[in-house]
Image (cartoon, rainbow over all chains, first blue to last red; front, side, top):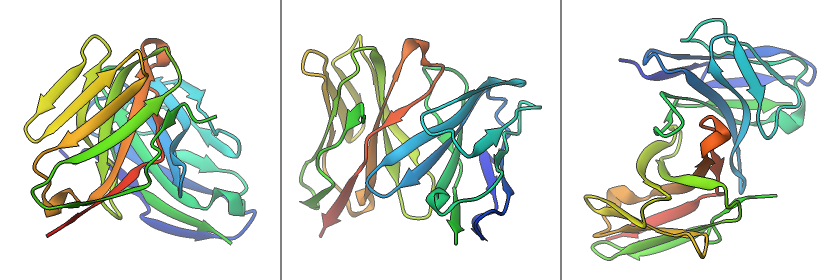
Length: 112
Length: 113
């Protein structure tokens, strides 16, 4: 099993550009989430999904869109990148509320 | 408003000694707590968890203690090893939160020989 995979590992964008961060898991987990990590802030939840076709907002959703068309994939879209979105992004999945979440290796995004 | 707080940004400990990491929370609805370990350029990896029905959970060198009345938990690592040098995150979730985790800011642990 590959676990949770994320692409790309690194990305540099200019302000106003759009892009999609990819996330996939092969563990058949229903729950998937996107977090961002900023210095001194820990990880903050952006969006999450409790199953295919079901998504909801987390703590810091502004500027990001998600969709969940399959159990395996949970892409995160930045429609118009801003410097405030410079961060490290982690995707995670879990089987249920009381199981630990498995994290991907992260995408380091810089917006100039 | 940060609901999970790790007030010590860093901790330095000698190899073989005990590392104690602390975490406080404010939301009384939290009933499941986890510790994650993170190395640079990697995603966090699960270390140990505890449910609110327990006050202690042990896994090898790692023990987590929960004091619900004080809304406080701690992670003990005994004995500390150089490979334990990493950032440790405390996280919490509530029963109706669909697995959403609230994270603390993390504590950087450095284990010196």
